[in-house]
Length: 234
Ligand SMILES: C[S@@+](CC[C@H](N)C(=O)[O-])C[C@H]1O[C@@H](n2cnc3c(N)ncnc32)[C@H](O)[C@@H]1O
Image (cartoon, rainbow, N blue to C red; front, side, top):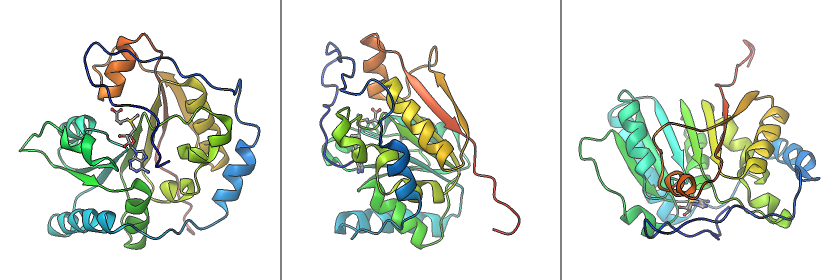
């Protein structure tokens, strides 16, 4: 997930091409890949800058325990700021690996949110290690990785997918590539997390990429699943 092919919307005139893929339907190895990852532990050394960013998040939660909302792959953090306004009781943590994107954030100084320069998978690992759980997890327009050979770089094809789900909470993924959102939905169903796929229309754009894709005439897709239901003996 961490090598990045798509570019930042630089100017308001720039338009985006629709996603082109050599896949015409869900990836033939989707079920096998997801099942393998659901039955294995994701462990990867955590980068020093991710550790540093996480320390800030953990300190904030210790100082003021609140429900945690994640905005993974937040880009400039526009959505993080808007989600924080929508969830005043929560702490919203936006995570992005690009310092450049984060530096373009337009701050709201009253905000109940943090922006973390980190790998999302690192932060997920550290939260899980320390027993933190998430109330809501937003995955807004992750890089599509449209070539079939890159299935394992997509969120649902990545080895960290099970970890993301273990953190709990309602999950919302948005994409301008219908097949990506469909594959994500299949992977969620395979993990026992049923949800629904819907089109996004009408609402004001939550992210810069959403705004750009709309302006470019793309259809926008959203997969939403409620929090996992835990059985009494779990
Ligand atoms: C297409 S952009 C979408 C940004 C934002 N959500 C939006 O919709 O405007 C994808 C973002 O994911 C970030 N990214 C990719 N892989 C990542 C990873 N493993 N951890 C953290 N950020 C990552 C990139 O730096 C980029 O900002």
